[in-house]
Image (cartoon, rainbow, N blue to C red):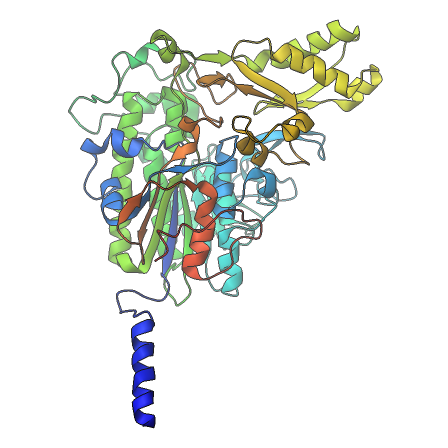
Length: 548
């Protein structure tokens, strides 16, 4: 009788418990988070006919695609995007409200990851090297992985942009590296280490940027790039690096003029990033023990090229065809070193990108460029006209936010609220401005006000400005990231918020879903898959279709 009961219980356990085979380990050996800077969702399909079978197509074919993934806040920029992906939180919680803003605690403008308490490592350029994640107010999924494993899991961030590597890698990574325009090297800061490891020094000594920048930028394919609209090069004024004419481009000549910065603006920037990432996997022995490691890999060149040329340019298409090859190269390397079922990969983007306003105007679609770069002068004049006092009443205008100079207003005897009302009245009369309000007014708007939830999630009470203005769809601010022939981003509109999200590898079912997903859902989904704690500021939800 007892034997019979025991047999029944044993059978029940066998049939109810999950069965893991040798090809499905309990945890992946390596997690690779891929962020493609400025990759719109439709890039997965716009160039699909020319993609190889081993890159984006393989991810879509063998992985799980969340086709309706959006950013659930604004502004949609690189710093906030990378932070949201890895913290599971919006700027309202993690504090990364933009790439740069006016810091009232500092009393001056700040760049997101600037840290004057650390020293540059691997470069003489303090501006390039003095960075850390201290500005980030919440933990990342990478932090939680390190804490869960008692620091046995290794974490490394790799990105040409400092912020694109630093924010994902979190507060306690093993290493983080970014690109130095001055020397064309991978560098870091004393926040992470006092000196570059020998393997990084040896990699830099190979001088790959010199090799990559010694060649012209030719088309990857001889066939016409039909997806690029005819006459795209008509909108070619005001570009960053003054690329002359159409492809091929004389990259050696540009390097002579602009130095190693040019690597950011060519597809070889992606190649160089992956070169270093694969070297990091090897030399740091990632994925070689029982505790899963994580590589935070971000490709920045798509953003530079998009800003330079726009979303329809031959250069943009060519770059994505070449990036597809780099994705295929990465997947092959992971196959060879670990096997597909031993790695967990996700690919997404930190924001999308908008159509070029002059192009839309030519098509008789409403669009425009708002002169934010001249707004400070205009607003100071407006205040002077209204109150009869001259002064520098505004510290900074950035990200469609305005930071008032409280001291200058007090000296002039101007009430802050009165100054704010004057500015709002001026802004509401300007072409392209949808609305303007003070931060308290924004917080008091009804819940059915367009995009109000997204706007509130992008604001932090200690860091955001005093006033906020919104632009109409397809309107850009003429900030430093915008060029006449290129694109920019930052809004709460779909072209900036809709991004790819594909999961691949360890325990990931093949398939796709159009169920709504927020970018903040990535971190808690990773936490659920790994059975670890989500980041401490997490507001996202688990994507159950992926966690099976």
